[in-house]
Image 1: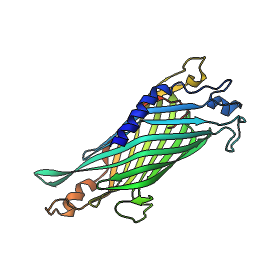
Image 2: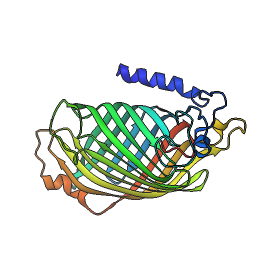
Image 3: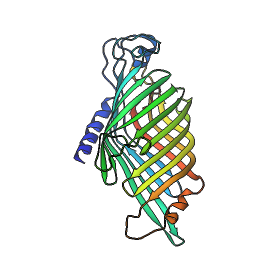
Image 4: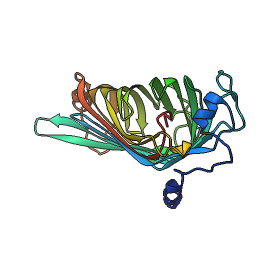
Length: 316
């Protein structure tokens, strides 16, 4: 806990200063250097964190992400255009303090009441490496420590990709593989297809401050020895953000994008929800799982990112 507090304090202290990154003499904004050539300035983006809610009739899923920082640049003088690494691709190093997902489900056990289950997944200290070109990009992330109920894992990976320009229209995807790890305090079995969280996002820019988006998610989570859930989410909505042109004399602030808010409506489908009773009271499996395996449930999907220094062309 002390480590998490220290990371948060350092990140929050540093964030106000990243809106004016180091500016070398005669350097260019990285986006301009990518298009026109020249020496790019080191640029940065950051966020105080984000809050995401997925709500249905019997599920409340809350994801809280901690402060994050990202430094990106072309590195050396670059050539405009082209598609090879080093001739215009932005190279990013990023870090995130923590990622906590908490969700509660309610299962009706008889006509007089219900039983509630609460679970959580978390990770601390993630390092991200990202390469971006105008029409595509990819990233890889490694979380130092992650876990769930009663166990922890060391070095769990995540990967993602982008197709299309984020400042116009793009398809983005990412996947977290909690079943792949260097060390596990509990089960040592390797399961790439289990304990996975896959997200897809299609985004189209309507105006600088408005995006039309479709989001989807497939989750397979082992929540300790007592609970395994597999479900699908999908939603259509809009993302609003504070945008502007910045000061003309400051190319680093030429186009900024702050505090994006996504609101969407969709549906959730439970594929599997297997539980073992945690108390010495026997419940019939059908009584616990059958209500959640009905038709698609109405879903409200909302996410607010407290980004303080980002740009319209950046997708993290």
